[in-house]
Image (cartoon, rainbow, N blue to C red; front, side, top):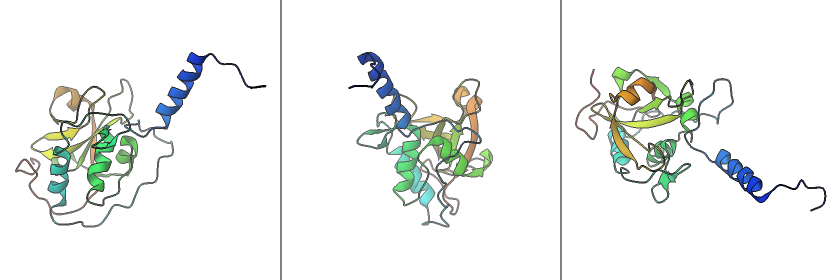
Length: 188
């Protein structure tokens, strides 16, 4: 092509790969002051017992492979895709990335966690960016899509790795407190 820069094939492939990765949704970091996707309105009261239903739906995805940008069981999940999918099953709209979910969620104190509340983490070293999200299931545990090479799994919030990186909790549904799939509400 006349006038087009001549890039070696390897450089061209690297640039295209980088552009593709940057265009995918996923567990993107939250950076204060940058625009985010608009937050959906938080629905009013939803069906009785929705929290435990959503927590069970999240637990039913345990074992599904991690896939960056994934948001359906047949293709795999990244952390925010799992949250997006599970909430969507009950008609609750949430943003697609961990960063936007953190920014849009109604904040919840750690002692007030209910099944299906979201737990957010800062996994990037020396950064305040929120880069990971999971779904609280009760009894101090949460379901999440951890990283490439692993599958959706359940982890304890008091694990040293997650405890040190905990950024906060949030909620996208409103409803009465019910026991979660583990049989108890959050400890007080």
